[in-house]
Image 1 (cartoon, one colour):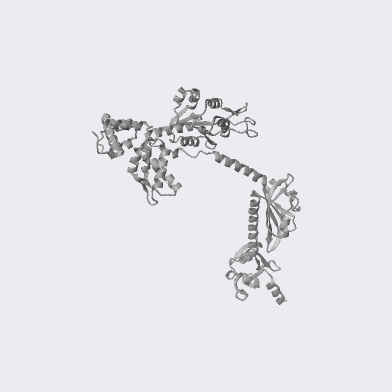
Image 2: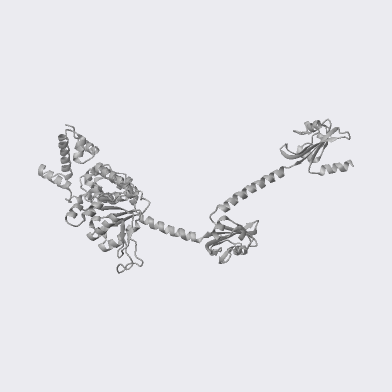
Length: 581
């Protein structure tokens, strides 16, 4: 009988330990051996405290308390234990028993289950947060999962679709998920219509394979109407980008000369106000750059900037371009008519370059636009309200044109709310070096060169020229200089810009006349003909000394009288070794 009991106790998955009333171990089965890692023969007859770490059996012997389903760590093993006292027929405690079980696997399993639940929650959140509509069918083609985007796209709820066949949601076309289940291959970019509202979609489906066994298919639907809408928006964006031609800011304008700095300050103030601006200056001074900068510094910078060269279009074409036309307004008029550039520039800026060249008839219509803030299309009668800033530019003497009857005086005053004079390069020669460096940097990128500087001697030669073509001419000269240079040359020298001599016959500027007068009054020709550059330097030096003396060495007044910066005056005094008198 005892042998049978021993077999039973050793075959159980529970560890068992029994002690007598003195705490001496009387029973220690095989599972107890495994968990406590001590053989029974070593444990039997020993006090339990010396064998089992943290044992509570002495406490049970003392109190007679029952302890059931207590969690405990035993030598790195998680266990659940029951401890009960053993009593005789008189109720006297004669021993105690502990029955315990290893629950490490159960704990690990519970942890894994918890992790799986967390993973499932995360995947569900991702599944429902994606903007693509997703549907999942099992190996029999029955819908088992859909996400929120699918409901939004098709108008079908989980109750409508779960448990239904894969064909249930298709309005037009074949189920690609059923094809996937047959072929086990991915099918991409199939157009079909789904849901009661027949939403047009592009569908892709792929098989779900688990352990080389087909378990179902997942389909992803993209709303084709959204694709079409995005395509249209892209077309509009490209159209806007083509017309948002303003690409310069005030940072792109080089200004050290007083007159240029003053022009920029006026332009910055004008940019902040919804007023018409008139840019005046010779050809090549940078009027268009100013127009771009005013637009990009204004609150209209995110709207269109449209440039119109008024001199390049005849009267009829200019009016139809500016104001638009109605269907049938003239032979060849587009069906449905056409918007004019004023309408296209709504909430933006229109830059009317060469404004002085428009006809008197067009001037009348432009005046109406400025005064009434509305346009009437060619061939139309209905006025169209507009909100457009006008920036005009001209190199023409508008005052003279008014006297000659070629430009309306009322339009002149409407345009001249904020006139800005952009000085010619001959009046800002102190900036030739920095302008040249800027040109070099730009042309290095265009030509793939690495020119680093321009010599003082080259600058001196360039300062002797009056630049009738202004900054545009300077850019051409620097460009030709780079072309004339050898690849290994890094600095522009006088020999590279000898081509500048071809401009010296120009007599349009007052500066040329000044030098001519001074030469005729002060220079006596003799047999020793000298270079013109030597003569002009000599005259420049004498003239600076004369003005300094007249101003009693007041350099600020002298610089102002000479229309140069104080910095440039010091440069010239050092260059010519001019001492204060």
